[in-house]
Amino acid sequence: MKALLPVALFSVLCSSAALAHDAGDIFVRGGLAVVMPNESSDDVASSGELELDNDTQIGVTLTYMLTEQFGVELLAATPFTHKVSTGGLGEVAEVSHLPPSIMAQYYFGQANSQIRPYVGAGLNYTIFFDEEGKGDLANTDVDLDSSLGLAAQVGVDVKLSERWFANASLWYMDINTDVHTSVGTFNADIDPITFMASVGYTF
Image (cartoon, rainbow, N blue to C red; front, side, top):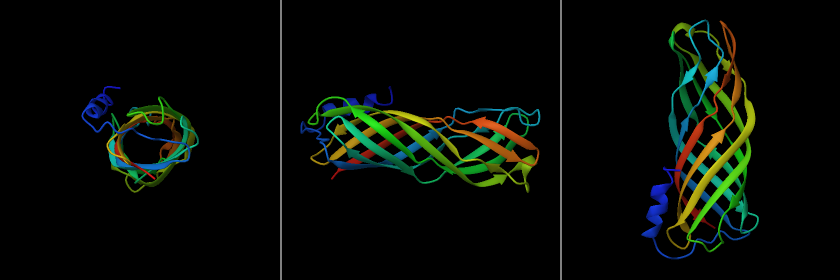
């Protein structure tokens, strides 16, 4: 929530025009999304659990307001790429993924409010690709299964003008996959927290 505070404070300096997310409105948000894995896994060849680094990419959401309070949102992004390592072996792989998610959202306040906080819950489907072995796994096959899991979010929209608004949001995604390698198959929970700062436009 501390990450959302600067956006809320910035709203005090913005125009007093109302932020209208009315029934039937469609709006898009675009900005930077930072994926921060909160991983745990089986022990890999007695070298420790798999560890993934953070990555930042462009994120885009598309939202349709069913009513003044309820909306449906689709999340898309450019591919995220993570270095995979263990404490004992160092870097062992690099993997890319796309995490499209669909969310049912509830917006607090009225449609003409200056600030519209919201929460959401839904499903995430993560597709892994371009897996490549590194270090001790160089020149070996590495493959990660796709994942279907729950997702949740909290966010806030702040009015900038008649159609433009600023946004900050936090996502949690339940991502579980089996990692297939030449030295065995390992189960991994990635479960990232994603922070997205963006600008939105209402149609």
